Structures are given as C-alpha cells and as structure tokens.
Image (tube, rainbow, N blue to C red; front, top):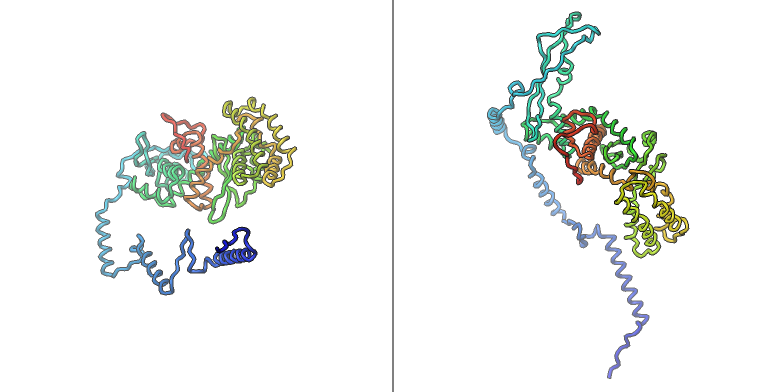
Length: 493
C-alpha cells in the first residue's frame, strides 16, 4: 500500500512559495492601479474609456461635427443661401409680416383713466402759484387688473392739466406724469413679474416667455431685471423695519451660506425670529466683525451653529443641539465598537430625553425647564469634569462640551428660546434652491434679490401672500392683512 501524504502543518518551502505568490499578486495589482489611466486593456466600470486609432479619432471628430450641426439654431445661424433665394425669403417674410395682426395701440384699448394733480408752485419762483392750463398731459401704462378669478391686461391712462407760470411764462407738467414717462408697465404688472421671479424662482427668460404667451406683450430681460431693482429700492425701509423688530425680540436665529458673485464666493447671512426674515450680503470672507455693531443693543439670545466666529459676540447665545446630536450620531456610526464613546453618548441621551419631553409638553417655558439644571450639572460633573477619556473621539467632544458649557442649555433659563437653529435653515432653503438654478449672481443684482427675498420669506412665515402684499403697495408686512383667505404655508419650499 502507498502511504498517504501528511496534511498537517505546511512545510517551510510551501510557506515561502505562498509568500512569493502573494507578493507577485500585490505587485501586479499595484501596477494596474498605477497604470490604469494609460493602459488600453483596463476598463473602469463606472466610466468606460474610449480608445481609438488615429483614423478612428478622425472619424469620431467628423461625426461629432455632424451631430453638432443638428442642433435647433444651426439652420438659422450657419446655413447660407444664394442671393435669389435670399430675396425670395425676404419677400416671403414681408408678406407674412403684412398678414400678422399688429398689436393695438394704447389709444385704441379701453382702460382706466386716473386723474393726477397738477403742479401747484413754480420751481424757479418759490411760493408763486401756477395757473391751470387748458392743455393736458397724458401717460399710458400697460398694467394688470386682479380679481378673485385671475388677472387680465388693461391700460391705465394718467392725465392732468399743465400749469403755467405768469412770471417765467413756462408750462410745467405734473410731477406724477413726469415720473412715469420713462415707464411702459404699471405697478401691478411689475409686481406680477417680481412674484414670478422671487416666489416661483422663474428665470427672466421664462418670465418674458410667459408675458408673451399670456398677455401678447414683449418684455425684455433688462426691463424685467430693472423691475427687481426698482422694487428693491422701494422696500429698503421695509427691510430696515423688519431688522429692527427682529433685534427687539427675545431670540434671533443666525446662519450663513455661500453665494457665487461673478465667479467669486461671498456669504449670505440670514436673521430671523421665526416671524420675520432679513438677508445680508457680505464680502468674500466668513468673518463676523460686522455683527458686533449690529447686535450692540440686542438683549435677547442668539441661536447659531458651532462656527467659531460667533464665540466673540458678547450677547447671550444658544448653540443648536441638532448639530451636536447629528455629529454625535454620525461619529457613533463611524465608531461602533468604541465602548467609551458609546457610554458618553448614552449619558448625553439620558440627559436630553426628559428635557425634550418637557419641551414637547409645556413648550419653551423656563419655569418648567429650570428643574433640569441639576441634571445638567450632574452630567458635567460625572461625564465631563471627573472623566478622563482615553479615546480621541470622546476627548474631542469633551473639549467641545467644556467650551460651550454656557451656551448649550441657555434655553432652560430663558422663555421662548428654541434649542435648535432649524428656523434659520428653513429661511435659507428657498435661496439654496435658487442658487442651484441660477448658479451665479451679480453683486448689485444679488443685493436687490436678497432684500426682496427677505420680504417674501417674511410673508411666507406669516402665512401671507407675497403677491398680495406687493399689490397692496404697503411697506409694512406686519400690518398688512389679507382679506377673505389665509395663505398656505409651503413648508416644502
């Protein structure tokens, strides 16, 4: 009988051969990783490489040129025709122009007549009264009339008598007519455009298309952009009033985000009290020096995230516990077998769970929340002061808790102070969506847009119609009252 081979411990030669094979595999794998971009026999599953010979590359380039010529505007921009065909095409366009119905002149469209008061005193002779002339001045504007069922196009004619001066023998037009001479569109029409731009996030090009489709009128992109600037200047005082009332409240939510200004990053800051919203555009840095004079007279609580720039502010602060809980949860997922960090997170969970139950039951009332101060002190004594962590993750959070000891639980001592900064993030969400759509802003256009966006978000927080506020010509959002309906809160925006 033949003896069977022994299958116990491998011999030294087998171990050496195994190490050599493993080294060879590792060598070839590292070489594949190093040369993957240049080798034609290696493919990436997520991004297959396109390899071709010189002749094939020429064919691909030719095909790409053919495909590019198939886009919509190529026929109009690139194809040339002979002079005879050009004359024939011009004659055809002329005939089509004759058949196309022309837009009615303002004088032939029925509309509303508004009497404007004439000028009363002579600008060259102060105090001298002007006499009414038999001649009249008129200015017609294209406008919209709104009702419960929608809106329709109309013409508003502003008329007034001229005024004559007996001393200088000059005629003066009414100030109201003089201000409207360079305009073609009325207030309601401009407000409708602002609403499309701010509330519905439509681009100026789409707004121009909608104006032509709905009202058969042409609106240039520059004119639509000028509407935003005009309304922004009109509501400058409204923004100042909103900011003043925000800083008079018990709590202010503060947050910031980036904005692209002609290729350079700047920062947009938002101030809100859950009722009013104001945006501020700052230079390309995240420094907070401008906040110190702005919050000089603020006596409430500032709610923010853990950005270090807020630490230098002298006002009372409440850090967002949502950010802290989210960070703890993420690190716990990353370190599932760190027993020390897990015990630390559990102790913090046991601290905040009863607090949030009382917040849900009683609201943000200090007389119901002050009883948890002893539990907070016990947590700091057992889990922070008397505890010496050995792991980096736990040590990092211990340092964070010590640094923000006075601002993590301020809501326990003050009425109406939230423990999170979700309100500021909610105010920024609309701008974040518009930023994805627009990509970049101009600096002047961004300032006008942000001022009107603050008013639009204020209307949204107060469940009021932004379009209704614009049409009312009111400059105080808090005093504006809608009649007959309550505007829905679009929480998903």
